[in-house]
Image 1 (tube, one colour):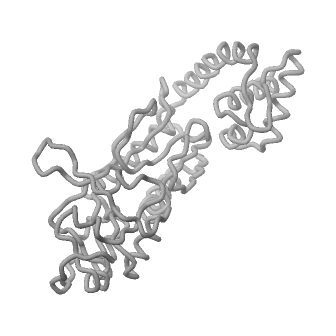
Image 2 (cartoon, rainbow, N blue to C red; image 1 turned 120 degrees about the vertical axis):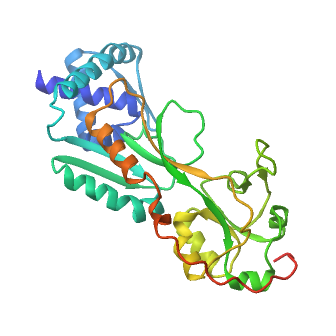
Length: 322
């Protein structure tokens, strides 16, 4: 029965994740092990549960019926085990997380380190990826998202605000001038983020409270899929960027970057912990979300020690095309 239960768990994971690879990642098992367990289950039942092609894995009609019957029972069993565990007992099992690269490396790593030290019996798998991955399909328990959340079935808890800044290097300002209004940005070379459409990046607070945000169509000279690379290119004088302050705070403090529109604010983002909808939140997930919320409560670390304002660049010339 123990072996059969493991086969059932593998089958359920494949249906939820949509592939043997993703199911293996969720269960911390090799793809071949997942495939063998599902095949063992099919042989024991004498029915084909999954329809396999080179591009996808989908349940057969019998497989879908089997999944619909079993999945709630397995979830109820997991919930019962979690509920029965002592509230003061150690956190165990495995927790899979994903987070953006720049934020994760600089600000999330020490937070997760502290959590891992406090819970030595819990396994943590942390992936850094700037793409908004399908956390359910990929088998993640938790993801950190930065931006404005759209409609989703995922649960979300806001951790903190994340303001954004339009900036460039002093050398760029001397050579090309600074924009005086948001409309002037269309005359400048801009460096854009590849994982978001430009219309989502260059959005500014409305002129009147309650109005619509102002959206500017920029000329993207360079498109990059990493914020730190964008920052470094802007420091080299290649164009104007809009980035979260947590990426460019040090560059602003040192004067390597200056604010290009200091009196005009881009629409701010927020940082969220998002996770799949669950009826009973597992203790390990709840503990991690609470830990993250506490870590980023109050003043964010990138604003905790506000740097001295660097000297302003010389008065810019009239904006012109780069």
